[in-house]
Image 1 (tube, rainbow, N blue to C red):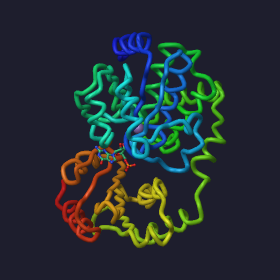
Image 2 (cartoon, rainbow, N blue to C red):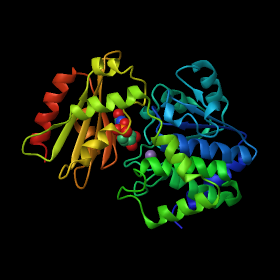
Image 3 (cartoon, helix red, strand yellow):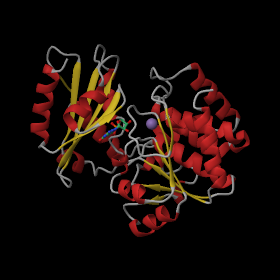
Length: 333
Ligand code: 5GP
Ligand code: MN
């Protein structure tokens, strides 16, 4: 069994611990929150004093997840979050592998005396954890957490844990369509449904909860799609003005970048989202096939992620970022 040693050691750490903190990456997505909440429910069931602290706010469409209302937000509750991190004897960092992905919180995690366990599926993990399970070949952190819980105590996968894990596997696999989706993924999903995950309800809660404004913003994004001449690439832009015109809220643009790949023959879609408050442009990359978006994002936009899905950041204006991006894409091999 892969990672058996790590699982044994993590099991021992859980048995020894009393106070545990679980941390997803900044701007957590379905997989980050799903894995964190699932593990949190499991550790509570095992008698630990456990808590999820998110480095930042997360989108409304995740605000139904079981236990979500007890998540602490580091941005809003800094002092008490720091206290909890200090008090923890065990810290899990989930769905990321570089402390910078936890924002300011990264420093606090580093300073803590607690044992750190990283569980993640991104490539090139940094060396900050006492124990880690790093499996870039797996489609979601939730699938790794499923394996871990099953290894420690399968009875811990009740309907609540199953719902959290289902959510993360579904969102990170593009609803079971990306190449990372395997027969094993479907076996896990089958088991989660058997254990009480209401698949149709979860789909509806995640995908059919657009506000009118969010749908209007999607309309603007779709109108803004531009193809790069002679290349199978498209770029989407959203300016602060366009975001404001639809009363943009965090998470509203989630998934927009994927629409570029709906065009026949297009193998790379990039969305550029202006953020005037922070004076940055956030980039999201999605590809099909051999375009390594993580390498491109890391090289040119201080970012990273997976081969086919990455993010990055630019400190130039929206227009300058776009111009630079087009130039880079044309010369990139
Ligand atoms: P998204 O485009 O949905 O924000 O992110 C896609 C993937 O890229 C996720 O796996 C996420 O963890 C990663 N990612 C997004 N932004 C960044 C970034 O600024 N730095 C790094 N290293 N990874 C990122
Ligand atoms: Mn993930």
